[in-house]
Amino acid sequence: MKKVTSLMMVTALSAVVAAPAFADGHAQKWDMPMAYSASNFHSENGVKFADCVREGTGGAIDITVHPGGSLFKGADIKRAIQTGQVPIGERLLSGHQNENAVFGFDSVPFLATSFDASAKLFDAAKPKLVEILADQNLTLLYSVPWPPQGLYFKKEVNSVADMEGVKFRSYNNATARLAELTGMLPVTIEAAEISQAFATGVAESMISSGATGYDRKVWESLTHFYEVDAWLPYNHVMVNSDVWADVSDENKAAVQSCADTAAAEGLEASKAYTQFTLDGLKAGGMTVGRAGDGLVAELKEVGVTMTNEWLDAAGDDGKAIVEAFNN
Ligand code: PCA
Image (tube, rainbow, N blue to C red; front, side):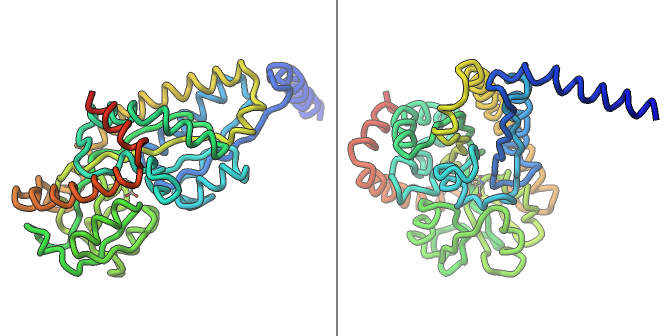
């Protein structure tokens, strides 16, 4: 009995001692929805970011990551942050090109096809992106690219003609448009749901990274991965601007420093995950290799059409981004 009492006292005491450490006076619990599997590098990086923030703010901001679309599906995460249903979250902004074409800067085929080029493209787009997000009550904390995008099929494909009529899983406007221009039938499916979609035949191909195919064990249904390096889309971690405004300057600095670390470590993880997951697809039994020259040439033609369409839609902002990228 005595032991229990002293344990309770210790617990009570530590709570009292801990409280003054919170610069904002109380601990804030932030739920952070993410759309991709818990084992994916973006999600693992998000958990590290949350740990860093907890430590850096002395426990004042306590982030809980919800991966795999468990709290909100990918498509709903942006709105959830904007409207304050959650304070923070991660989203692939190219899924919102219909709101502003600039969000699709990272999904223009063959504009930036390597990690280095995509970093340069992101730097060129970032000021505009930050401005557009700010108008939507969103503050950008950090952004991390996916590995290069390649094509998945359940048969050998050597030309665009071979793609005719194939059911194609899309994840944003650009992927759906790519399907249309190659005679495929696009259907939008969240990454969290692709294993089932492929298993049931709702979809039989997609463009994505080796990472997503690996995360979702697509070798159970698909047979070929063609390295195309079409683009490297970004995931962005954003916080609701009203919530952010209430964070003390000291904690803002701590969060931003964790965000900078997450951007750098996420990039390294993405690079490391590239070969690791291509090897994993092979180990799963898939044929993995570069697309043939004929197919690449045809896809580049599709890329020219899509680049022109994006430049038309993104207007002066798009032109400025591409010019800054080419400089
Ligand atoms: N994986 C995500 C987006 C890009 C990627 O590589 C997906 O397929 O949904």
